[in-house]
Image (cartoon, rainbow, N blue to C red):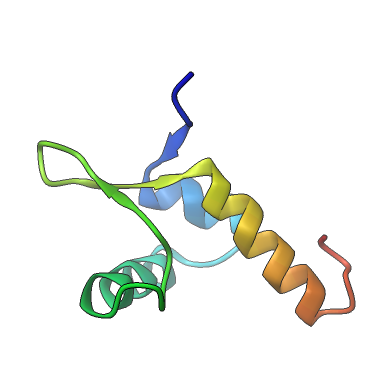
Length: 70
């Protein structure tokens, strides 16, 4: 079974940040792997974010804010 892949706008809504923030995270990951949001590049060149990244980000944010989200 394939993992769900999110577009940048969908991912931003899911975690409650702006699309610009996600764009910056993706660019950082591209420049320095392991420092931003993991993504896959489609044959068309578009970047998609796996659903597992939504879960990972929410866990990280939740733990930084007293576990409110995680």
